[in-house]
Amino acid sequence: MTDTFANILRGHAKHRPNAPALTFQGRTQTFLDLDTGSSRSANLLAARGVNAGDRVAILSKNRADYFEIIFAANKIGATVVCLNWRLSAREIRDILADAEPSLLLVDETSAGLVPDDFTLCDVLHFGPDFDTERAAQPDTDPGHEGAPDEVALILYTSGTTGLPKGVMLINEGMSYTAELAKAWGMSHNSVNLVAMPLFHIGGCGYGSSTMLAGGHTVLMADVDISAIIDLIPRYSVTHTFMVPAVVQALLNAPQVAGADMSSLELLMYGASPMGDVLLRRAIDTLGCNFMHAYGMTESSGTVVCLGPEWHDPDGPNSHLLKSCGTALPWVELRVVDPDTGTDRPAGEVGEIWLRSPMLMKGYWRNLKATAEAIVEDGWFRSGDAAYLDDERHVFLFDRYKEMIISGGENIYPAEIENVLNGHPAVAQVGVIGVPHARWGETPLAVVVLREGQTATEAELIAHTRADLAHYKCPTRIAFADALPRNASGKLLKFEMRRLYGAGA
Image (cartoon, rainbow, N blue to C red; front, side, top):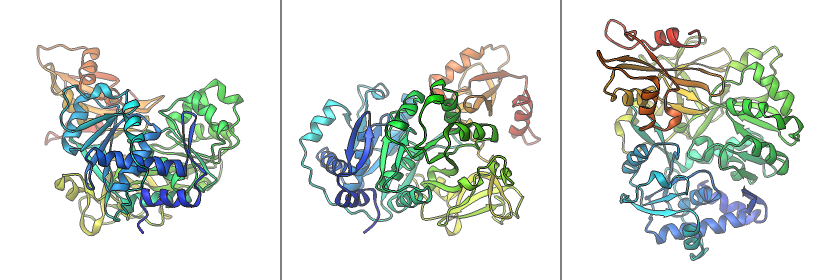
């Protein structure tokens, strides 16, 4: 039997029916509750015309129904398309046109992103409508087993061209989430606090880890520092994942000083290193172990970890805090010269290439992008630049794709550049990431105006906000007479970072 979402849930419902599985906003479901509820939802999807191989899109903040639909779709062989509710209406429309779901499930927060005359697919709203239809369905499990290469999830990730790509994650790849849970010290006794959005692999992937291990998942609608401080002692939370920006916000909250955090065993973090100053504060305040995780949507989540044993900021190996760790046992990792495909020696920068059963099946309906990403012998080109030390610790150096990570969100400069190039006053634009005290990085756009044209910083930022999710938009605009380019006209991003980055 394939280890699918549905099959693992069926097993826990049989052997641990009354154990807590999922808590959301004070309501706790046991594994039997979740299994029965997801069967009703599976029959609801089928009644709405969703068949095996079809896609079900979710446009919603985190909610208990989200996990239920993931299990439900798996029980009938359908694929869940997880949509980022922070995107603009235009971006959502483009993704839906590409994914062609049979059904779109929407919450009240995201309803405004779907026009009243929307006709691409059937739409069902979470809340009373969804609850009534689900309650009318039988709780009989449809019984679909699922093949290893069946696509369970499609998560859209922005490309360097600004066009979204649907990452197809299969049952076999997602089944390694249960193995990751073991690597993170999770068991049926663990309690995992999940605040990452479920449209992220860090949400639907990491977020399902403890649940798949038979433990208890406490789900939050989104990041709320006061709620985190309340929920950890209330449910004796043992594990959680936060980006460093959220860790910093947690430590800065006045009420954390008097809070009982003694149940915490491990705090996972990712997107960027913790830094020794922040780590010392976190160790003193939270008193738990820490682990750095590196992964991506295309790899079904974490593929490299820096374990707690390397998190002593005053120890002899403190330099490893700048590393994201070593590859997990089921992951092959190389650092390669991207032009020749040959391995770089230790200490020399190259591109991270990965090979693992966790890898995506490919990009939805995008053979060209798939062929560019997955090359000979099944190696995936990550686009991330790094070097290895003699013990194969991975040190991220830069990003070949120029990606910006702001508060844990991936932002591609090309998306912003494409929008700003459409402004009538803009002649040229280049976007880089610059340091930000709260978010780690933030986009800065350097703009050359057309001769005789004028535009203010506020006008250009407003222009991007009309077409992009706000978190993607530049927080600063710098005006220049020209952009630095080489002899062939290529934009020199490293020179832009020198001129407008941290020093500037």
